[in-house]
Every structure is written in structure tokens, then in C-alpha cells.
Image 1 (spheres, rainbow over the protein chains, first blue to last red):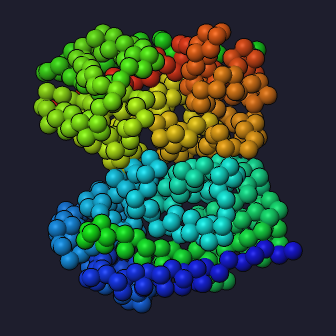
Image 2 (image 1 turned 90 degrees about the vertical axis):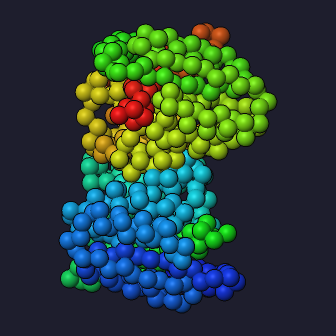
Image 3 (image 1 turned 120 degrees about the horizontal axis):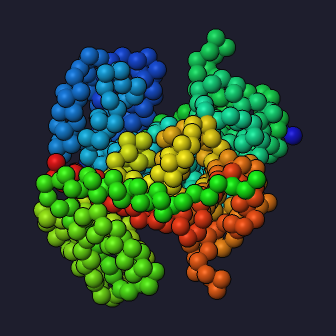
Length: 279
Length: 279
């Protein structure tokens, strides 16, 4: 039997519908600003999708475009200005940043109440302490998919393949907060298969096309593919979809899986920061 | 062949000697305050040991004793007062707190620069982001022992048995920051042995006497026992020491292992908060 294929676009649509209703009932229009530095094509695509989603639900989305060679101090000044602007309810900084800019020094300056991506030290600390306030968007997207499929997490054997600040580390602690047993693998892991082949849920987010093959996957496992890479064969995830779907119980495709849900989850966070700023 | 038994008291002594030298060179005496609420016997013992260590290295340690039934607001007022007191360079809140007090609401009030235990959202977030500032004391103690034994962490298969805010979660992210492959187990884990029996390093901190037996342990593994429970047979750790030491490569005993190193590591953090406040 073949795996159930999760329709991320449908989940995203449902989220947008709910957000749209909530936004319609607000007294003012939520307004968020994204700081974009330089001109990365993949960022541009993501921003375009997010702006479209904002527009659809009634959130005002502004992009503050800064030159690629701008000094760190000037970026920080822009953030301070946005922190103090009462008409701005959410701030995002578009990754990747140019090489001369230290992402942590930038992120740290965002007012935690306006931190749409949940990446400031304060919000990350609350995530780690299980007192979750604003959760990073990609982990929120994974939790949303698991929740949509009514997946019990307590005691589940889960492998996360990624240990970055934006995905793997916060996602792992969020799963621990829900009492899953979590193993975190990455590029330095000696034998990935030893871990993934015993997992009930695998979440992979490394951007290595077809890293996860059917040999990595236990029967009926739930496979969530966060990877997204442009190859000569088209857009591709971390999972060798065609072979894995025969073994897995559930699987998210790429494209049309985690991606659209992540865009929709950023709207959830925008509404959260709006409420923190206004209510 | 029997495991190397790690002498925690010796490691602690070395740390105290170094701290003593550093303190002697400071212009003023570091002064830290511990808020103690109620009268828990185990806390009293730990506080006594820590005060002794402070005295030995030249750090002034004051205990602010509050009544067991004190209102949360009054505790928060005390913390605010200590935050503003220029003569106080570090603040700790002794756990466990009485049932009516929410630990997160209390900890969050501490000025991150005076946060000796590294448990405020800001410091926890910096730990999660790999931009480590003040690390929680027990995880710091484990890292200190691993470092003392010149243990390479990159790519190591490590199991942490504990997923609390104070030990398991921050320790796991600290190990991920060092590129270890980390699995986190706990009371909801279905088959602990499946995880521990493949680990090169096991760190257990659950307070269940003799939970980890020789069947749980791979040959030559490094076993760090953070558990400490009073039983009718005396003080006991999580590890069945006598059987495990025949299989393990290295092992920390209880008592005399992690405990004294943890007390010494709190001195390291006190010196850190002093420098953040004064320099």
C-alpha cells in the first residue's frame, strides 16, 4: 500500500481562511515590514509568495529594501526605527544575509513583541523553556502538519535531520515539550540510517536531494520533507519520494507540502505579533 | 577491564583554585544573592555546599530567606530590588519552589546580566542559538567533565536521559552546538535500552536509582551520572555503578562525580555575571 500524501496547499488554504476571518474582525489593519538586504532570487520568490498571502488575508506587507553592502549599524538603526513605529506590528529580516552581516547581532535587536519569526533570544528562550510564545515559522509549519494529521507525539520516536537555529534546534525542543523522544541528526552524524530506520516520524530539512531513500524508512513512518532544492530535474526535496512513498505511512511532497504551510504559518505569527503590539 | 572513574572532587578543586586566583585580581568583591523560599532539606544542603565554595574563593554569598507562603508578587518585587542593587552581581532562586509559585514567571524577572543560573529566557535563547552567554549550571558541569577528559563531541552518538528545562533541554542544544548527534529520552520513551545501548556517551539525570544497568551500556561508553537520590542504601545515582563500570570506558560516581563539579561551575557563572555587571 502506498503512503497518504499530505496536501500542504489545502492545509495552507484553511489557515488563510481562518486568518482572513480573524483579521476582518480587528479594529485596524495589521502591518508588517520585511527588511530585505541585497537581491537573492530564492528570497525574492519566497517574499512574493508571502506578500500574496498577506494581501489575500488583509495584512499589509511592506518590504524595506537595503543595499547589499550596507553597514550592520545602519541595519540595526532601521530595526530600532521599526521597533518604535506604532504603525508597524511585525518585523522580519529576510535570510540569507550578505556575508559581512552577523545574523545574531541583527535578530537580537528586534523587539520580541514584533518578532514574527520567533528568532530573538527572548522568544527562543521561551520556546526552550516550554513557555512557547512566538514559534519559528518552519517548526510551526511542521507542528501544524502533524497536528492536522492528529498525530500523537507523546512517546513517539522522532528523528529530525537538521540542527540549525531556524529549524532543527527549535523544532527538536518543541517536540520535546510535547514529550516525544527526539534524535537530532545532521552532516556530522556517522550513520544516519541507524537513526531514521527506527523512527516513527522523520523530519528532514537539509537540502540534499534524495538523501532519504526507502532503506532509511521504517514501514508506516510519517515523513515530513522540509528540504527544497532546485535541480536539473526540477524542484526536489530531501526525500526520494517515489521509492519512500511505498514504505511510508504518510508523506509530504515537494513542492506542495511543507512550503505552502510555512508561508501560511507566517500569517499566524503576524497576527500574534499584532495582538501583542495592539491589545 | 574496568572503567576509568572520574574524580569530580578533583576537577572541582581545580576550578575553585582558578576562580580564587581570578577573584583575587578583581577590584571589588563579587557579591551574589540566593532567594530561598521555605525550608527544603536538600536545598539547604546544596546551599551550604555552595556557600562554603563561595567563601573559599572569595565571593560574598548572601541568602535572602522568604516565607513558604509568600505571594508571587512579593518574590518578584525582591528580584526587582536585587536587579537595581549595584552591589549585587548575581541572583539565584533556589529550587524547588513552593507549589503556588510559577517558576517561569519568577525566573523571567531576573536581569539576564545577573542570571547566575542561565535560566532567563534571554540566556536560554542565546544558548539555543549557539551564541552561548551564561549556560545553566548542571549542563555546564557535564560539558566541563567531558572537556576535562578531552572528549571529542563532533559526530559522537550521545543519549541524554532527561528533558527538563534545567538539565536535559539546554544540555541537548549545547551538545548540538558542538555537532554531536543527540537523542533525548525521558519517562515517555518507549524503549530506553534501544537508545542507550548504541550510545558512545550517556548522560542520565532522572533520579531513578540504578535505572541504567550494564544491559543499557555499550562497551567503552562514557557514562555521566547526574542523578542523585537518597535511598536506604545511601546516596545513589541513576546508574547501577558496580555492574556498569565493568562495561563502560569512563564513569562518574555518585557521590563525588557531577555534584561537586556543579557546585564549582556555579562559581564560574558568578564570576561571569560579576564581569557583565561591573566591566
